[in-house]
Image (cartoon, rainbow, N blue to C red):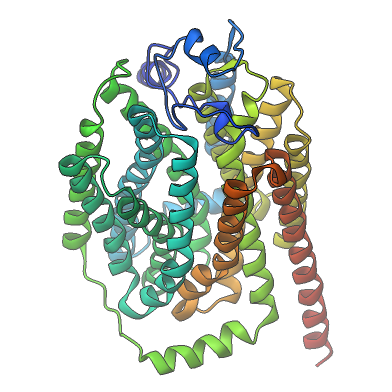
Length: 499
């Protein structure tokens, strides 16, 4: 009974109708042509006449996913979790583990959930702020370019810094950056957008690798089982998606159906959550990290990363995944509304995350009852994402087909992310893991920056379909990397067997 009431409350806030805060993105931001739009973010209260004044014809019917999809996703994830393989359940909830190990798991997940809510609030309120201030297409493109430029020039060295100073401190840096941006937004509003964009881009990059690396290192110190980090990978993906949905629920509550409401309550909420997470992170435990000398770290990095072709393949697959998912999140909303129809994007958004949650729950099944080799199902997952992206890149306009393709992409992403983390655990030493993860994202961020610059100055040569086609090729390239990794792994196994 309690679960039913909680689900109905959650459905109420996530699935509120057009009077509520939704992720309504305008099609012309990344649509070819010369028209300008009011915003690229969450937008409410703009009537049909406002859209037609921009030269865009809007259908009177608003397409929304049926509530049956939400119920289906809830039941699907519940069944997948309820019937988890016994081995995985025992590893995650093993009461025979040491007290320090069990305490670390609880504290880490609590801080990770808080950080995920902060990161998700950035996505929601950042786009709403674009709408609130009436930001133009050119300004949004310039903001994205600044963010990716900061990720390339500054963020590429954050992984090395994290390995040297300690991963707990890098997580603290992530929270401090959000704390600084929230204070700046409350006091100065939208001034110095380049500064906040740079800080938030670096924070997003830290979020992508610091928590995972910290968890793996601590599990190696405290964990009684070697496979316990693998069980945490899919749990982190699951909780991250649930926290992002919670950020949308919190956004609905704070905006409360008023599109003209100022954004300071949102940044106050981020400030409060960041402050709580900083206090919890600083007071829960201390990290016993030995700072390696820079020369020693460089020698280790060359020996274990640069000279190992398998790590190059894993890094390439990770870069392709980051590149394709980033392109998708930039273009998915303009693709949905490309023919001028009205779509409730705020209702599609939790469905995407729900399918990603379901995909993450499939990870323990592949390693449990199904007993499928890691490289085998990862190869098919990348190929599936490539095929689904090709449907989107084809500029297909049937909304039902597009949403199905979106769901397939995110379900596959839920499988891919913990699988890549497990591959990194198998091949990458812990002392250089952060540097490897961060540097592998360098070519992806550089490619994204190049495409956005090309789109800004030569938009006719880089349409939406072209960018999505490049993302599709990146997915097939990732599948090729996993195929080569599988092939080299078999050759190495055969060589060892002969010896």
